[in-house]
Length: 47
Image 1 (tube, one colour):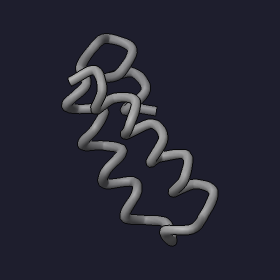
Image 2 (tube, helix red, strand yellow):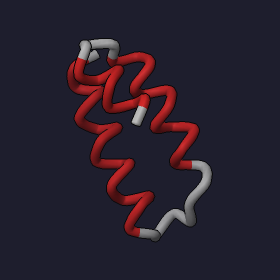
Image 3 (cartoon, one colour):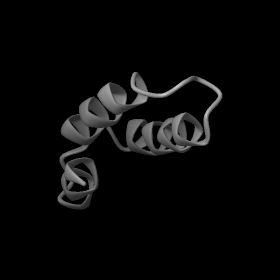
Image 4 (cartoon, rainbow, N blue to C red):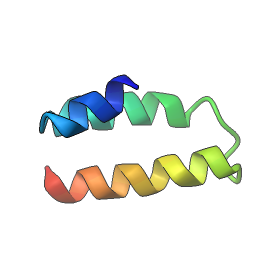
């Protein structure tokens, strides 16, 4: 995953952008959307 690679190298803005785009692909209540929301919250704390 590109977002994970960006996160691992400390490129939090890129990781956030990718995860935000991915989030739009899933229904809001899906497990995928919930997981992405958690990842976004984590990366936003580091920005």
